[in-house]
Image 1 (cartoon, rainbow, N blue to C red):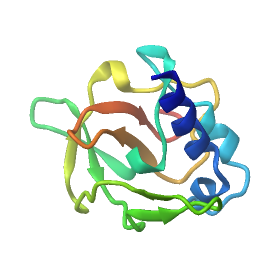
Image 2 (cartoon, rainbow, N blue to C red):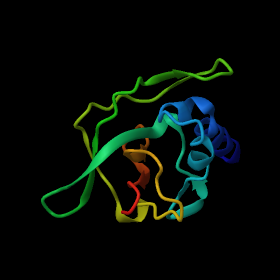
Image 3 (tube, helix red, strand yellow):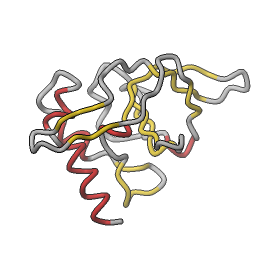
Image 4 (tube, helix red, strand yellow):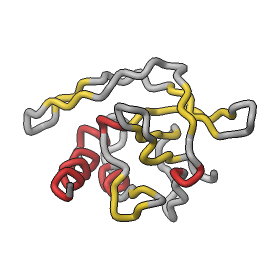
Length: 131
């Protein structure tokens, strides 16, 4: 498990992941993201990250609406291919309150980000700065 977390942290820290956000200095930021309810586990990496906007369900629960149009396949500089499950733009993912990150460093990207497993389990929700 520890080696898997290290591999995922390396994926997050890779320049290719940061390049997805058009800024060369985001690798360190993404590598620092840990699950808010388990500070020993990372939020994972490119294969689990989706850009989104915030909305609410009728019951008031926070929902992340997928806006991510980036390719689901990514070739890393070392030649490895990583593939994330495709999520349709407009898909809604309910965010458990304990998964909302309140990081001392605000989200420097221009979008909220949800890290979610293939089965739909939310690892982390990284809101926009100021939220």
